[in-house]
Image (cartoon, rainbow, N blue to C red; front, top):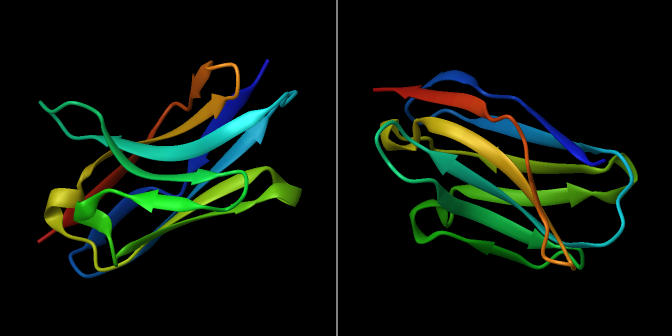
Length: 116
């Protein structure tokens, strides 16, 4: 059984930075891609960034130029480096794994709060 564990969230002032980590535990059969999503209070969960096993990354327009997703296969870890944070980036950030079979696994989420 695959489990995702996120860490790195916290409280930061606007303009600051945080790095989120997502460690993958368990037997990994075949990963299609991994990604970070976020959900703010009263809003739907939205895609932030995804990265394929080949290292190709895609970003939501609202984080382009500020956030960077990366992976470390040796550590089974995916990172999200967040720079120039804004109050509107405040949300619970979730890690997601999508397998080639179409199954999806979610982490428990980590809170990011950006003060103005």
